[in-house]
Every structure is written in C-alpha cells, then in structure tokens.
Amino acid sequence: MTARQLVPHVAMRPLWRCRNCGREWPCQPAKLSLLSEYRGNRTALIIYLGTLMAEANDQFAQLNPDRRVDLTDRFLNWARARG
Image (cartoon, rainbow, N blue to C red; front, side, top):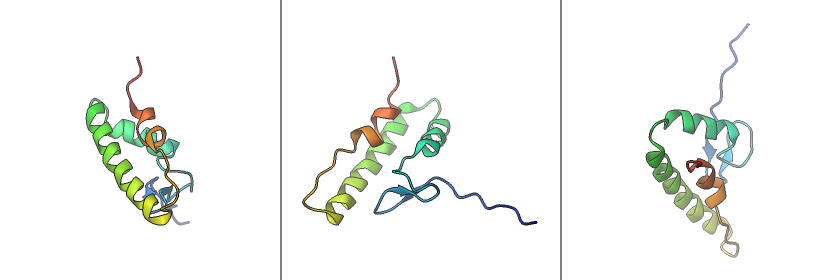
C-alpha cells in the first residue's frame, strides 16, 4: 500500500486555477490555509494577496488583452477582517 501524495492547493499560473482541485485560485482550501498561515497578521496577508492579484492581472491581460477582469473579490475581499 502506497501513501497517497498530498497535492497542495496552489495556483497554476498563468491560468490561476488550483493545481489540486481545478477551481479558481484561491479556492476554499487555499483560503483556509492562508488564513491559518497568516493568523495574527492580516495586514501581511492582504499585502501578499495584493501582490499575487497584480501578477494575476498582468498574466490575464497577456492571455486575453481585450478582456479586463476585476479580481478584488477573488483575491482580497474575502481576507479582510470582518467587523
């Protein structure tokens, strides 16, 4: 019996789909992982996600220059502190 290899929920660039589940990244498991990793430092999480969002914007623009997408909800809004 072989151990099942765990595939992390990371972005597959330049499509920004999850390498594990194929959903738009960050998928729900990736979000949970990021929230855990950045527990206690929400500002650093937002900065990290903002950097990734800028990279994704650039890559999407190269793939499809005629179509602009707003990635704010996908990358940032879910990570903002509630309250």
